[in-house]
Structures are given as C-alpha cells and as structure tokens.
Length: 526
Picture (cartoon, one colour):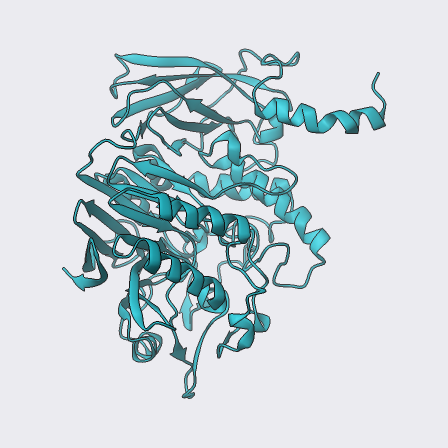
C-alpha cells in the first residue's frame, strides 16, 4: 500500500510517464471485446495536426451520446485502427490497437507516424464488432519541398440552436488541404425553449435546441459536445480533411480571459470550470498528446510547415490574455487599452510567434487566431463618438502594435491573418496606427450558424463600421466560411455565404473575393 503522501509525491512522475507512453499499455480491467447493440461511433471520426510524417486520427467510443456516461461502463476498451493509401482500404500501410480510457470519456487520439509526405491517406476504427466510417487524412510536404498551391477553409462559431450546419457540408465538398476552426465549437448556454428570441436586434425562432441548463461540470461539457458532434454535416467536414483547431470563449464561458469569467466568479472557482472545459475540449478534438491539459491548462499554440509555400502559426488568444478593459464593453479606447501591463498573447506565446515569424523562410506566413486583429471602430445608434470592442485586439492595442511592428520590421508583404468570432465576414488591411502604413491584411470568417440568417450588408452597423474604419473593405452579416487559395505569388480569399441556415440545403455563393500579392502589403478585389 502507498500512503497519500507518497502517492502525491509520485503523481508528477506518473503523469509524465503516462504522457510519454511509458506506463503499461494493458490495464488489468481492459475490456478486449465489448458488446454493443448499436454502433459506438456515433460521433464520427476526425483527423488533425498533420505533419510530413503523419497525423492524429480521432474517434470516441460512445454508443449513447445523450446519456451522461455515453452508454459506456467505467473501464478501458480496446479499439483497432488502420490507415490505408486508398479509400477502399486495399493498401493498408499502418494498423494497430489503441485503448479508449474512461478518464478521457473513451476518446482515442492515435498519432499515426511513418507515412509518406505530401499525400492523402484514409483511416478507420473498429471496436466491439463495429467499424467506424472512414475519414480522409493527409500528410504535409517536407519543410523545404516546393509547393505551388494550398487551399484551406476558415470557419467557426457554430451555435447549435441558431441554424443548420449546411456550411460544414459545403466545406466537406470543397477540394481543400485542411480546415482551420477558429473556435466556438460549442456554446455553453442553456436550452431557452422554443419561443422566438432576439439575436443581434432581430427576432429569430430557434431551429434546434440545447439540452439541459448552462453547462458547468465535465459531464455537462461532454454531453454538449455529444449533441453538436452528432450532426451529420459536421461529421462529414471532419471526415473530409485534416483540421487545425483552436478554442475561443464559448468552449468555456462567454468572453473569459485567463483566469476570469464575465460574472466575477472568484478565479480559483472559475479555474475549476475551465479545467473541466479544457479536458472535454481535448477529448473531442483531433489534437496531439502534447496538447493534453495538465493542471487545468493546455498548450494549444503551435505551428505547421506546408513545404516552402507557407508557415502556419495557430494562436491561443484566451488562455494568456489580461482581463478585458473597461468592463468588457464597446467603448472609446482609453489609456488602459494601450498599457504595456496588459497582454493578448502572454510573454511566452508572443516570443514564440515573433521568433517563428523572424526565422520563417516560407513564401507566406499565416497567423490563424480567434478574434479580430483589425482596429475597427463604429458608432452606436444616435451617437457620434466611435467605439470599439474590448474583447478583440482593439482592446489590447499594446499587443496589437507590437505584433504589427514585428511584421513590418521582419516579414513585410508575406503575412496574412485569418480570424473569426464576430459572426460577420470582415475583410481589410491592418494599419499600424502609429506609423500610418499598411502592414498586413485580415480575412475574418463569419459564423457557421451563430446569428441565424443575418441581414446582409445593408444595415446600420455595417454602414457605421465602414464610415469609421477606412481600412475595412467588405463586411456582411451572413453565414458561411472563408476559402483561401495560396499560390507562390498571390493569396486569394473567397467570402462564401449561404442564403439561409434556417432550412436545409441553403444556397451557397461567393459574396466577394480579395487578393494579396506577395511583397506588397494590402488587399485588392479579385
């Protein structure tokens, strides 16, 4: 027997051993051949975080996602996996077993290695006599290999109640190399019933409904992911291409910042909720073991090299930021916004990003993150004074200036930012407010569903934002995604929009397209 004191002393070593895969792979209570009355792959499959050697293949064993235990017993189960060169699995190149542990809600993250670079692969799982759907993964080119073209989609903000996931089905049909999900994969709010509600000044009837109240516990978060990931269109997008994912606020709580929530909860209590939310996020995303939460925190910022064409930097703008200034309102930028005591990225992440941008030899650099980098202003109805959001980079102008200065000094003309959160398409140039020069540009992708159908571009907010933000080139309040097409000398972004998400099969169109030329900061219409 080991007493409590010795157990606590040994825990850090046990934890590190587990993360390194050094603990026994065969738990004594392992269920080798579980029996299921129905498929345990109700949440589909996914791949993510690819590199030139392999990728993460994900699934979760959960026959009853609407039940608190997922219909599973509290014991580990064996899961088989295989990877093939072809979608019919005639040429299987890797196979093995993984263990779905109850501590991770029976999720499986297989880090497949030893694959050839720059090619697609297909993967699938087996458990208890059932076989999962097949997913399409892919490896990246070798870091210095010539790459002439890269295509990817930028999407997020998928409030389950406010629309159907038609945009995910359309993304699944796009010939793309990867998806960047900028966050708000789930929303934490309660089911408010079938009655119409006001969304962004409009009365909207919910299309679907959450279950239960606002989510707080690990079980709550798991059930909410189970609800969202049961959607067939979302599953199709996950199965179609590898994803790079980041969380924003609603995976935990609206507009959280570091160790603070929006309600003034004592930080030590909020951190308990944040830890449970991050565990559930890891359990349901195709992330590598290095992103597994430890002590209530997770390392989510990371990079990826796409041959000699692009270096991607995927940021975390929630976990390390200072609390929002001025009670997190939309207000005039006061002195706190410019204070060097406040940060968006934290010192370690900022240093990592700056060093990576400086060292990058790729023809393009992509900064993929959660919230608007552009310093956009607008006037509230009946007011003349221009205000801006304290939750975006405009509320952290010291950090915004530092980033734009670094781009201008070290890599001008080859950096593009993609972001989200605002439930509208925004496109514009990034102007350093002290230097008065265009440094880079930004495509901000609208939501998948959040905000319901929207009102287009002829509304008071759009007119005011354009009037007070000269660098803003396009904006529309419709649902959809951004499709980016990267060539050696140009980068194009298409703003994809749906006419409706209230009924199935909304019509997809391109609202506008913009192009950046390498070496020339700034966008122009295609």
